Length: 138
Image (cartoon, rainbow, N blue to C red; front, side, top):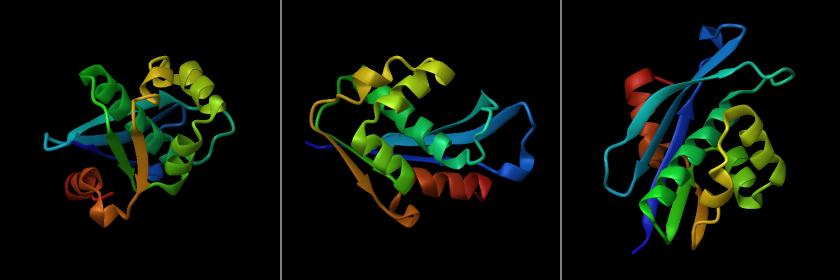
């Protein structure tokens, strides 16, 4: 059986403080409830586009949870093309970036889930994205 994980994030740049950036993280694993919460990070010097970063964080949280549950044969679905390519390439600089800024050392192991597939779909087909749209209008 394939395990399906939907991931998405929301970020509204007009409602941010200078020193902290807050986004909405959402993921849904199989038929479970959508997990949705706010996550704040320190401002990263030079970074202007935070929405893709929060998309990456949503995928990171979901993969860490999938690894914790011992899931295999996982298909992670994102509506962010940037996040899709970052995960598909499994860039080393992303692992270093996540460890430096978010202390997600588990990402290195989580991204090695046995039979992990990454898919891009439109937001209309993303159950996590639909939940963010309904609750926050993002």
